[in-house]
Length: 439
Ligand code: ASP
Image (cartoon, rainbow, N blue to C red; front, side, top):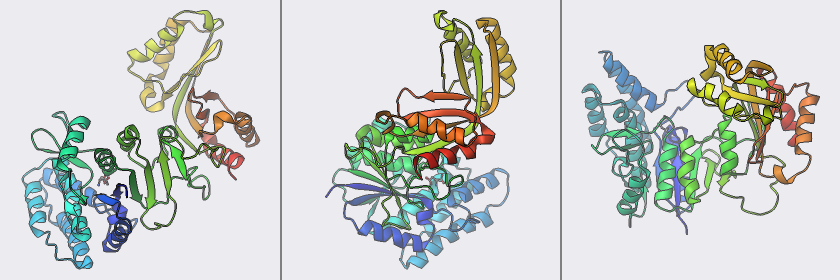
């Protein structure tokens, strides 16, 4: 039969109608034994997430203002869901307690976690599953860092023999029993941890999109869906900003070799995106590339010196400058006599001139030039390394679109080709690459 852990995002649980869809999905497959809910999300574009309302209450409380109105919104969200579902669940005692604790100055993590806690009670009641508090399962250390090992042993002992359970997402507890949350969107992480903990065959992540797209739909019209992607490809695309999941949700399941399946609660018949350690078949992937993603916030420092290749310690001196400024580098493409430092603009800010001056002093290059407002675009695909002519197609497409390439880096993973271009060319470049490889 197998075991599936299903995490449902906030929009999948925003109202009673959405919750009914969740019930149908869970009941359609008896392998769906572990359910991780988020807090109720937005019902429409102008709506507010319950988590945000909770943070707001705490803020108001801290400013000495009344939380009446905002807390009433939270209560009403839950009361309406429960009454629309027609269950006999009475959340008033829990709501009263949350309110009292906010008024008594409870921590931000405690307050934020109550969205998931209350929703966990609602979902468990609806599905007739057992409710298990995440505070008893997910462990953090005294410094607020997630404790993977302790959590794993806790899950193994606590969940032994339990058949069908609901565990609220987003939080756990530290050794003093205080609630600690993951960063925003952290219910994805809880789902992944639980999947690993119970040795699930599949981690289903139910959301409001039908999976990952091959490019940003704000740039490319109706981009194709990615049906299968490896963890490594996902990491490359996610680094460039294409995300469907919380970044930390990948590590627990990847380590255990559990696939993640991104599915759409509003379109459960669609295939979604399957994230795997390695593709299911040894055949070539259906398309030459898996996806395209990019970011606009880079600065490139281009250093040139004749016979750089023969100079011992050149790179160390150059990187030493960055180290002194506590700036990490993102990429370091190099040629025989050239080296480019690709940096996040946010780290460089107003220090760019100082950095260049120090590199001049310590490395005595023939020339040094810095380009702000640079964008990087990664074209990612596990099939690329076996296909001749990929780079030619990519560069041909960019040339055809009149995009000037300022930097090229074929990552040593051979999973991607990264190009550096001016930010102003970003959209044109993404469209050109997409149409060269996909449409
Ligand atoms: N409710 C939390 C948030 O809004 C966590 C989650 O939804 O995953 O960030």
